[in-house]
Amino acid sequence: MAQYIMAMTINPNAKKDHPNLSHHVNSSLEIFAKHDIKVINLYATLGRFDFLAVFDALDQNIAFRVASEINTLAILETETWPVIPYEDFSQLIK
Image 1: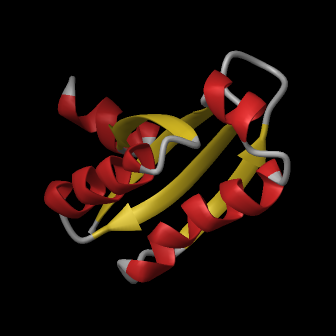
Image 2: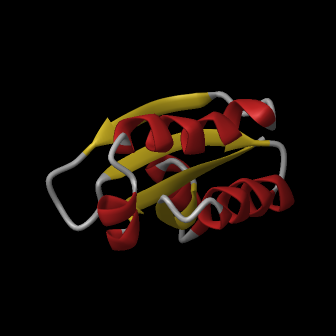
């Protein structure tokens, strides 16, 4: 199983068009569960992104599918990165 980080920003148009924005954000995040993906951690941030999700997926195709479905709802825009622990990376570059 591979680990990923998904950075999400609220679509500027969604801020204008959806008065109950938190409900729509939560609905977007339910896509993880729809694909049996357990989100390890979900953070709200004060930086460039509004939310960061750390999750495991069986493969890259599922991670792509989840990101695509979230983007299709037009509430959140995503950027997804595969990640490995630093210790594993250190062994790769020795």
